[in-house]
Length: 431
Image 1 (cartoon, helix red, strand yellow):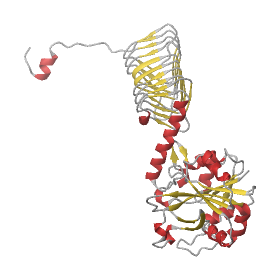
Image 2: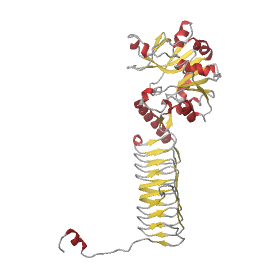
Image 3: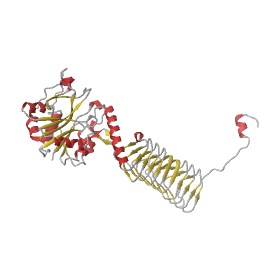
Image 4: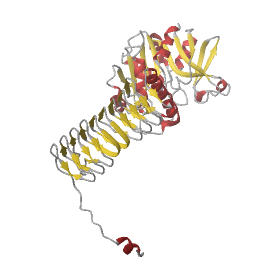
């Protein structure tokens, strides 16, 4: 077994955000969570080192089975100082330590397992780039790593080296314990670099090997552009997973599905849909619909519908331009142009076009309950709190502001008044 240390203490100034870098989200999940979840697939000893906005980051990850360490950033800033904090706190239990970065959400567990297949005192990841700008360079001779140079400290010749440090290492614990206390901050950033251990180990004749890794998967997130590119990759992974498990997607490149959505049975998703934090069970989500925080069972939604959080649809048809919020709909039809908020509507009920539940009085929200086999005519306003019992007809254009008993007709209309000849009087034209 190996221990894993995840470095997540940095501020991430290039993100130009008040949000800590590792809490920026991709497909509705923070990047640090992706790293932790992959790490847990290969180790039960996960150590996360935090500093910047310590409490905020801790709240997001503290429910994972991990150890959380606060870096002694004042005395030991930098990556070397972060690992030293984890070692000093005796959180690292195993003899081999895999060191990851909290801003690399594209790494997968299968790639990390490859580090254990190479035998050396230190194993580090490298990428060969046509344009290595922005990365530390790695000097390799006879397949052995000789030196790592941070870009800010590299000379002109060193900047020409195509191999760059991908930022992931497997290091024996005894090497960390020996060399971390020897680090110094005599560099441009005045930080303690973990990479300086490489040169110390080389000078002592230690065996250091490099693993060439895929640039896409080991790419770090440094700015909002990187974040967008990584989210595209993760979203494609999510969609590919669900398509392989039986979900039909039409033009999947136009569909957004987040990391917290699941599908059961044969579902069908049409173009330009957005689905977040939802459970979709044997349902069809038609074009340009948005589903957020909902459960959809054996139903059809859209096109161009919006199902908002805390909604549950069972055997229900929701048509175009219908919005549902915090409602439970059981075997009903709402074909078009309606708002159903804070409601419970039972089977056999038909909701006419233009119907709205008036659930908010400016201070509080109230519930609308509609029973079975209710026919709600078009352009109806249901002013909550209100209960419509079974087998009720509500006439088109009605405003319902009190409960309606079973078997009743509810009608609220002003008498139609016709004034003959008014058109000609108004416009000044002759008949």
